[in-house]
Image (cartoon, rainbow, N blue to C red; front, side, top):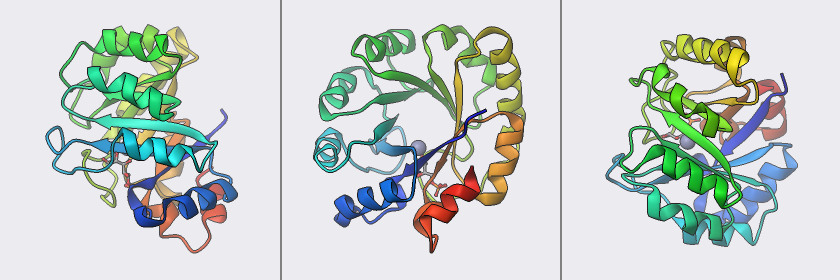
Length: 214
Ligand code: DX5
Ligand code: ZN
């Protein structure tokens, strides 16, 4: 399975975003992971569509947009306009999940569906025909730098088995507490897109860190 690495800019220096985007590209990272938080769905507030539009002027990389918001419905067209290539919505958000996934697709973006650690993996099964990717959160959403939750490994494994049988095109992304040792575990369980924030941005050599994740 080809492994992709997505760098979460949550741990980067936001005041120097153009430099950070160049660094991510030079390091050979595949995607840029953009954590959008509205202060209601999760405690934190991060950045919105205008920030993504500004980033777009400095990067041609794949923008993997993770919406941790109360209701993503009206935001989807805004992030498309800003330059997102993929939008991942939470199954726990308000709004019609299937309709949102259809809208993301209609607008020409890739679709992702995220599950918090406490949400049963089976809940995403009905939506798999509409998904390019499922994000199994490996920490509680809201903050970078938390410890990986090992209980999430069984969810990844179950989803990989189910997808292999019925939806082999679906990618499995993991997000939270990913480093060179937890990467081994999630890959073994069947994940193929690894998000890392702290691990990549606090490393001395991002290129080497990225290679270690793969
Ligand atoms: C958490 C975010 C993550 C976060 C991961 O809510 O979705 O993308 O940035 O950070 P690390 O890799 O530091 O755990
Ligand atoms: Zn994220």
